[in-house]
Image (cartoon, rainbow, N blue to C red; front, top):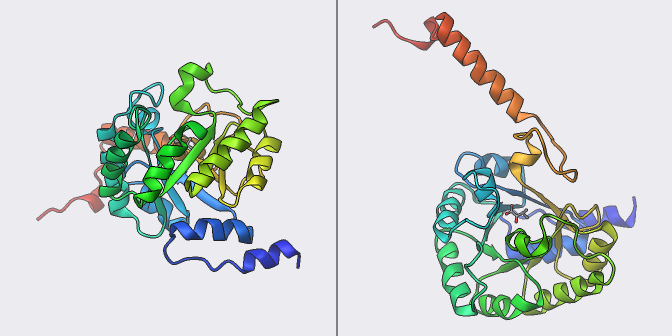
Length: 277
Ligand code: KIV
């Protein structure tokens, strides 16, 4: 048995995930699992599958609303999606994204919008940015609203960042560590690292006592997050950091195509699917 095995054994799996479990899991070397969900159909399936955290991400805009980015997503969109998810799950922590424009102007705006997401059932909110949003993270934390940070590629700033590109290379590595420390000092309960070179993600992870959750950031973060539709194979193309764990697009297409054929050839509905009296 390795020392890692012993550490993993010392973490008692919670019946219901709470914020303090996150740092405990990190300390025990128990990797954290997070997946996105935006509705009442998928969220309970992901809970049954055993995820620790559900992210009602603003990727809702891309996945469900047909936008080309997260930028058009509104508070009303996030409220509706968060409420649907929170109504249907109990064990995982539900983290809801504050969308673009909902927190940058000042901490009061951020507080008002975070309250809206907590009121509909989120357990924590996520916002993008480093030291420049630390005062907002502190205010929300002091008000009893847990905050997850988001560093690296931050999709709400894609216009400024020049699209989805790796962040934290070269001199930017130290800034990322400093940003992560500023978020942690402000009270962030976890930090998402998106599109960060693996050694940089490791350095950030090693510098923190709160967990990092990686997406396109290599194997050394304290947990991983994926957009559910990417990992389930709903798209033909996915970014290279995504693994398709199944091919739901093909299964669904096959099922709907069989249905249309059977309706057209009259074999559906068959005798099992209707009553005669
Ligand atoms: O909105 C989202 O799905 C996210 C993940 C990519 C981390 O923020």
